[in-house]
Amino acid sequence: MGLIPPPLRNDCFAMPHGAHWTPVNDALAHLRAKLQPICGAESIPVSEGAGRILAGPAIALRAHPPATNAAVDGYAFQGPIADGPHELPLVTGRSAAGAPFEGTVPTGYAIRILTGADVPAGTDTIILQEDITTNGQAIAFNGPLKLGSNARQAGEDIAKGQKIFAAQHKLAPYDLATLASAGVGRLNVRKRLRVGVLSTGDELIDPGAIARPGQIYDANRPMLCAAISRWGYEVQDLGIAPDNREKIREVLNSAALSCDVILTSGGASAGDEDHISALLENTGSFALWRIAMKPGRPLALGLWNNTPVFGLPGNPVAAAVCAMIFARPALGVLSGLGWLDPVSYQLPAAFSKTKKAGRQEYLRARLSNTGTVEIFGSEGSGRVSGLSWASGLVALPDAAITIEQGTPVTYIPFTEFGL
Image 1 (tube, rainbow, N blue to C red):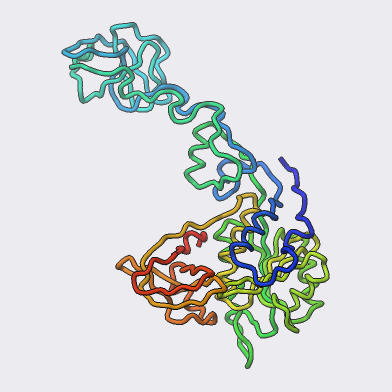
Image 2 (image 1 turned 90 degrees about the vertical axis):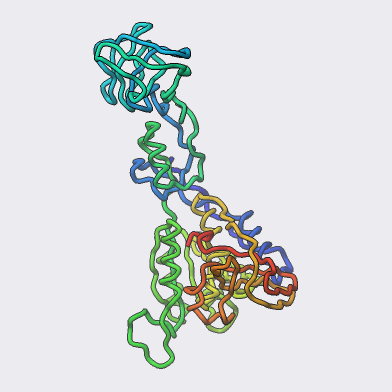
């Protein structure tokens, strides 16, 4: 615990020589092969573990249940019990949760027991109180009753020393109950991945500000910050940087001191005002990926002072799709969680479309009440409202395809992207 993983290699984003338009699956395979966890580990109380990623296996410190106990209110005795009527005298006392019977019950005797109580020595079987009659001195009931009836056996849920969860497991609230029941008080987890989010562009202003002619509101930063928070990472809002190379350099220098990863939007191509690409190009780690996809295409990647930078497109729809397809699984690896592949479903289309070969397409889509998939009325990547309208994406392959009403298509719900 407390060790810091080595930084990423300077060539981790470099595509093979000669690569031009890179298929989506090739780009994903490259990220998966080249990235590694960059977050160290720390010890935290189990009560603070929800949403954290285990840095090592979680081992049960004791069995659950720790002792054989009663699943019902009733009477305990030694089983099994044969068919027919039976009468057993009662010993004085009882076994209750938190107040177990300390003696041994003689063979042929029974004892009062309550739900959750340890099964006393000399007993192994329990009959429900509804199935007996008693005068306070003895109980009468009818058999048969199997050995161990209505008793929870020690360790039947979790054995002492058992590996409860493996490293890379992201802990859900109910996982904390499992860990606590096995006596685990502290957890060895990855430190939270700190992700800085930066928007670039002279035209951008914060939502709510007074817009002058030519200015637009920054839609990407609120969206990306919220997504990263939903994924369980620590968000650092780096604000808006103007189209000024030196100012962007200052922001990146500062962010690299406090962030593990930097996510930018805008300036990720090769134009005059694409300053993210230009700055990364001088680091010796720069890779401008031209992804064969729609929307998206340009991804600028590199290391800034050993801090990985993912330069997403400036268009909000393209930024959202690239964040889901590329940034989410990459951040999963960097955080120690591991690679994240969304589950997709083959569902009938409620639309018609002809697509040319050459690139993979992602359409904003949602389920209809008939179980088919419909797509947003416009494929324009400037129509940001389509993201709110949709409940997922339809992924169309690189190959040419003609879709008719009812053709099976690949649908990925937003929930599969952790959103």
